[in-house]
Length: 308
Image (tube, rainbow, N blue to C red; front, side):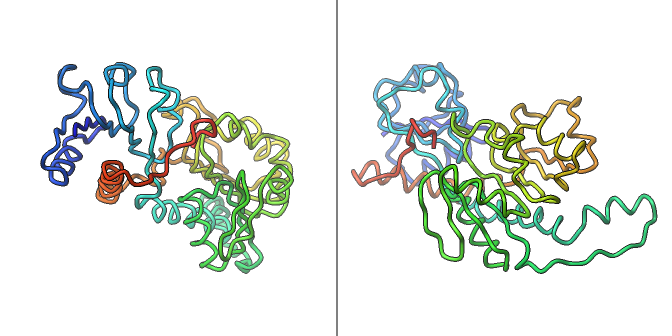
């Protein structure tokens, strides 16, 4: 078995995989082309076109992250090779913490206290009951489900939306266009955790932002392409319809210095750090996936048409 690894910390991956598969040939994409060609498996994050085209006998490609949009758009990706992505791998808990912070930031009025501080304005704000603060979560994959259950356990009413029907204990699940509108009309805080696909790009536009209740807030740690930033700025500014936003992902990263989001008083910008992949959990998941492939066991693969 030959495995080629392509990721920033490839040496750690190489060492761990070599320990798990002592009889395998494990190399990194830094090796000369002949040494990295003709692998049985690629374990990659944002691979080059040349690396993909050098392979002639792949059994599978393992994407070392939850988002596969870059990989699926890379020229040279073979049509007939199954693609597997990391599913949670420890990212769910980190994402839940990030979203919790965002929800509490608005529910406990920290945005208002920060605005008061430069003015030395001493004023307390009422704390709404968690039961009166519905949180809408768009995207109920492994990570979205983890976040939804965490917030439900914290006492917030959680409204989850997905492309197809789902059932999750403690979560009111919606689907389809009508279900999306129902979630938006109720969500005091909206959390977007959808993948980047043709169906989700620009999903949160002016029309859908207008469905949110007055004073609602938005948290986007999913994909930057989900959100129309011009529509968001308008909803935050001219109309004052939205109270604030916590944004971790952007269509262009790093976010350009000239973007008005950096200086907007109602926006918090973080540099795509909401849920970094915990190395040990990710390595364990990849090892389990490789063992399953080699044993001929069923493995959940990416639906390329759906994009996740």
